[in-house]
Length: 306
Image (cartoon, rainbow, N blue to C red):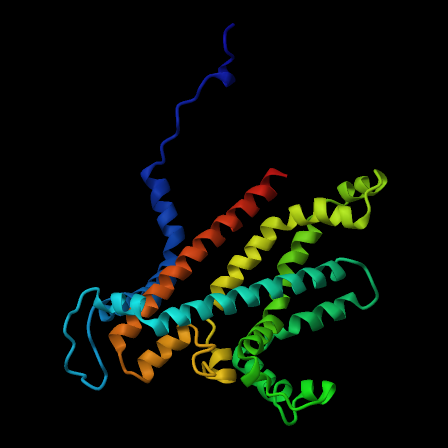
């Protein structure tokens, strides 16, 4: 069978020099922003890596001997930093898990039609728009205060919530602020679900719990993963709530890695050691961000295949 002229294999078209030049012309307006981003983010990070290889104490400003990886060994073997790492994991995991659960509940409610849904949605989003330092101070003084706090005013007693339950106090504040973020992601996932498939399941006799467990949750799996990963990236760097509510205490009960780096930098004046700890935190964040980007890419591929 003779192939038709339009069915013959065409040789690949190589980009001409003019085409490459046109692409660079189109990208040229973005170069100043790219250069600015590199200068603002990468140059300080490279300088931080350099500082992490020196033994620099601010009390001895002229003495900065090169120590190689000694600061990293100190950071990874220091009991305070190990405790801060454990606190970081507990605070981050607690805030992410509870905010995901509450975000899913609110997303399921907002996915239904009812009078005033737009107003309710706006009110539920509001906590995420509050500055973290303002949210921390609000919870510390208006709700957790043992004398005039709202919680003791409603339930009675004079419990000092911050001193008695420091981790719970910090996690509660973070959950209050990050639940709207999770809710928006999961609500977008719910609204992308096929209503025809849900109606077919109802016709086949499936009840609400079966539809939720066998259809809604599997559909939301990637959205749940995305919310957990993005929340972890941001919450692992929590500083405002720790600094404002507990100051890392009582003792070191709520001292996480960012706050420990702050103490090392501005209380112990060990710039080299603090820089090494900062580099480790950045590496851990990059690892989590890599998984987040993979989840985002898979979401886009899933939408394109529909």
